Image (cartoon, rainbow, N blue to C red; front, side, top):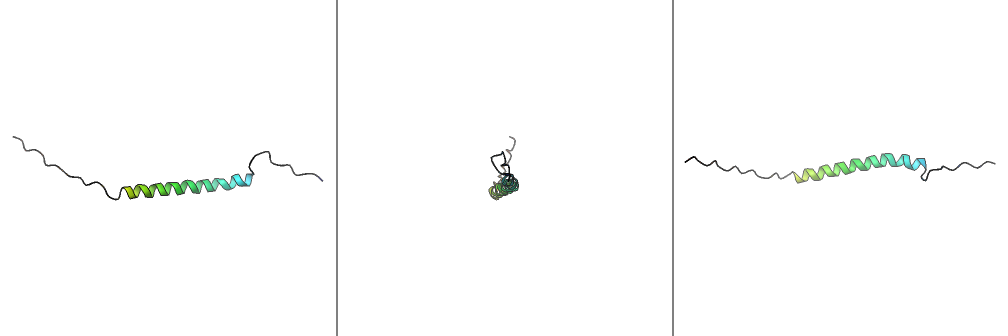
Length: 57
């Protein structure tokens, strides 16, 4: 009876293949949350106050 060869890598391939979509979803989640926080910061734009031009003497 022969033994199955063990993979020479530290992590099994299935775990690496599962980490690829998980990392993509994590990246998308970070981008969505960053966009929401930026949107909340821009809700109240600063009020622009125009100063009257000085009349010439």
